[in-house]
Length: 80
Image (cartoon, rainbow, N blue to C red; front, side):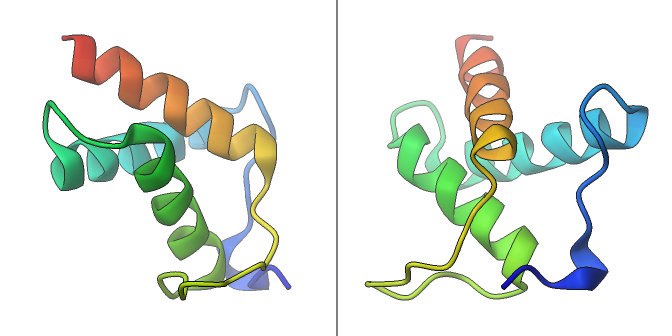
């Protein structure tokens, strides 16, 4: 279940872009220039949505569109 306090702004909204930028910075901060961006993007998105880091077999929903936006932004930031 998604934490209602951690709502996701609609696509295209400035607040959504700020969220994606913030999460992508967290991803890059965690993996640097040579890490698993896919995994860390999912972890950061999950943590934002649910308020806690995922457990090993955590199957709680993570909004795919948000995850993909974070991943794309992290790849862009990593490329420099």
